[in-house]
Figure 1 (spheres, rainbow, N blue to C red):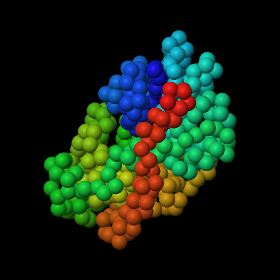
Figure 2 (cartoon, helix red, strand yellow):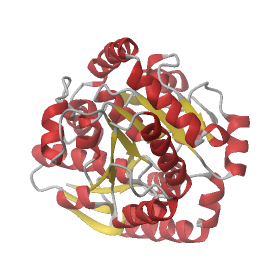
Figure 3 (tube, rainbow, N blue to C red):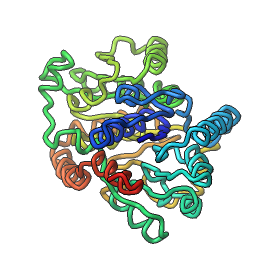
Length: 379
């Protein structure tokens, strides 16, 4: 069996790797190729193009890379039409993958989209486009399946692989031991994003927030984790220029789960990190900055109240969201301090997060693999 698979960023690389492994358990001779990151490569995927080429976020930012992205999509369409897989799987990155899926479906290839676009939040017209582009949508969250059912687009909620992987009872002391950190003092996780553009926009505010916290609670220390040399180097450059280089700050590479599990609270970029912090039952402050024009367009079009997935899944505001002009060092720092000083609120939040975790823990990679094999008739 041959599959084509395209992931758009670090979180997609993780999801796709789990899916490839689950498919290979069922089909030992599986051949996978596509746009892949290190996790997919380790799972045996042939890399036609590295995942970093698609890791662009925001309307204006995508426009700046339009020619390069368009040329890459045309190259992939040509490759997969000349070498047709049994099924093509687009993992997230809907603006890139839906066009690719549409072209391949028209050429006779079965197509699956793994991770629902935010059609429930904005650009609902994409449901019509998806109906002509994909044979099956695999959603991560239960509320998404109903949206597709209403639009008569085949969809299956498989749950979230992170909910399967992250233990329901985190162990703060064990995580600190793995990181070589002392166990007694409060620790705040700083996770300013996996993309260079995110770190560039958030690093100064996060470092300023850490200084704000340290000025009021000197016993607090901080831990940051980065996914790549580029993001870590950029953060270190901002740290050196910030004037707060004396912060008790520990910097790690590829240890975001350990950092979250070890922490007492987290300051993080909106995205997968917010879901991860929720699964580790950690109180958080969610921040984001983007190009001003992108933000204005999104603000006009988005029909939901929340940006952070914990708030969306809870159906109410359970963690602070400080976006754009609200994303200042003082506001971020004050919001984190409130979590450190209100243990009763943290306990209540942890119960909410535990309920959501249980609902998302469904054996996602195995469910996704079974759904795909059912579609292809290989089950």
